[in-house]
Length: 287
Image (cartoon, rainbow, N blue to C red; front, side, top):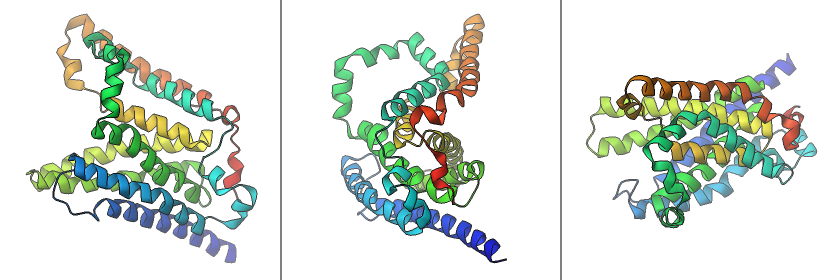
């Protein structure tokens, strides 16, 4: 009976801590005077400060709620996936795996010519000077993966099975994105339209979050989740409207490339995330 109570309390503590952490993270974005929308340089810079501070706050939640027996076996940094061994593999292999998933959109970029822009040095020079690009490709993936994956998943893994933890963890990430609904309404969208858009965003971010949580569990590296997140933000939601502009056999070819990418990704998912490749010892989370 006592062991059962401890297990229930452990689950409650893990979920509650993750919920509180997500609330603190989102609240930090709104402590500033909201004169402008999220894409205004002033708003972006202020939110950069917020998420930078959260990089120090989030580990406190993890440290306070993680079972101390886990800390006896591993450092807090290793638990969060911040380690050197296997770092290059954790960066390159999940990046390749995510590119396979986006094989269809990448092929479409090759066809429409936009893929060539990545070979131009000025594309990268201009991008690094663009606050929106930096937010979407660097700051958001860095801060969100650190908080919603590195600091939350270990808490859930100590109380739930890996499959359950991987399912629960993205829900906090997905729900957190509902804050964009506030800005949609401010821009003039009616409540129903803003809500439906936020529901779509929730679904997309939750599905991605499961993939990201899976990467962290399998590789044990924060780098794998960061690069996957950055690349997904870069690619965005596949442009189905552009896909439908192609006619006849070429449209069929396009669809086949999309499906091939998805099938290959499914086939390679476990193989390319073999924990031993990343010096990952998943038993560090077990009590």
